[in-house]
Amino acid sequence: MTILAPDERFVHRPLSTKEPFDPDPALTRPLGLLVAAAGATLRRGRLAEVRPDSRSVVTGDGETIGYDTLIVAVGARTVPALGPPAITFSGASDAAAVREMVDDVARTALAGRDVALAFVVPPGPGWDLPAYELSLASAHALELAGATPLARVLLVTPERRPLEIMGDVPSDAVAKDLAAARVEFVPDADVRDYDGAELHAAAGRRIHADRVVALPHFTGPGIAGLPRDPQGFVPATWTDSRVPGLERVFVIGDAGGFPVKQGGLACQQAQLAAHAICVALGIESDLEAWEPALRVAMWNGEGHRYMRVDLGGGHSESVGVTSDREELWTPGEKIAGRFLPGLLDGSGRESLIDWAPRPPHDIDAV
Ligand SMILES: Cc1cc2nc3c(=O)[nH]c(=O)nc-3n(C[C@H](O)[C@H](O)[C@H](O)COP(=O)(O)OP(=O)(O)OC[C@H]3O[C@@H](n4cnc5c(N)ncnc54)[C@H](O)[C@@H]3O)c2cc1C
Image (cartoon, rainbow, N blue to C red; front, side):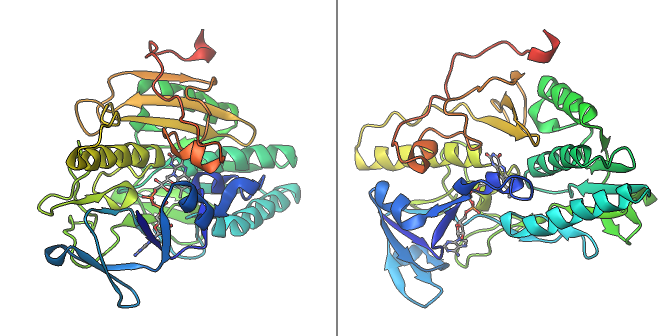
């Protein structure tokens, strides 16, 4: 196995929402060590082009590398959804700007002035959770600074209800979390622009905001030689992560066509690809169990709320939900995968994510 990657360090992106408030040393790890632990060889470089006819890829430096099987896992590209003075949060490199903005909001409120800080989820494919975590943690920090109620935190999103994709029970639980933290939830808002005082949403709607942090738009990776859907993502079959029309080419994670860009889902897609490869090589595999699920550990500035929703039967159909503050998988890593947590903590242990299904419930309501 050869891993072609430009990075010196692996970045565990889910921890980046903690970075403005409570930096975690586990945010990055040396990529070379992780790759070696997985029994692969790291080759530094960037995938520029796939040439399926000759079963080879071309790197950004013009090198050609042959493959028997190719897994494309280059992630998505992000572009700001709103221009300045809004700031964009795409990951840890934007943490300092968010911290500065939260501190500025606190100072303004402590000087006796009303100030509204909005976190904006843009329409389109992506993963909304970071906006929830940032707004909850910011509200917590502003409360600790004594800046509330003059400092208000808004969460502005196209969703109809909090973390809608997770289904009814988790959504209700998240609504309670937002209310308890005094985060104002602004639903049904397709924000297109910000003029420094108001967010401009579809249908002429205006939402007042003094400071704005927006999540970015996600677009496809734009690798030559790969098919792309209208948004530039690489199409994949839902059940085995293959790129339709290309032999022995798989795509997993944010680069693929599934609109939810979530790490736990990427791990499941990786398992499906690994299973298909094992089968093709005549190797026994127990990786195929395909019960697609979203597993979410939502950080709120102090702790986590754990949630799970099955995606069985269709791309976003909820068929069962569980939401509580217990760890629903072990270890309770933010990216729930069978192998990733053990690789990251160096133990090599497999995670337990396939516990017996529980009936939907919200522990706070019991
Ligand atoms: C702030 C934030 C919080 C999140 N929280 C959670 C969470 O709590 N739980 C969860 O499950 N998910 C979460 N996610 C989503 C999760 O991080 C992503 O879904 C996941 O990282 C996708 O993995 P990936 O490998 O597809 O892409 P990435 O993680 O983006 O990795 C792609 C890698 O490919 C490299 N690369 C890029 N282009 C090339 C190229 N041309 N050639 C070679 N290499 C290339 C990149 O440098 C990068 O290392 C969060 C995301 C963000 C941004």
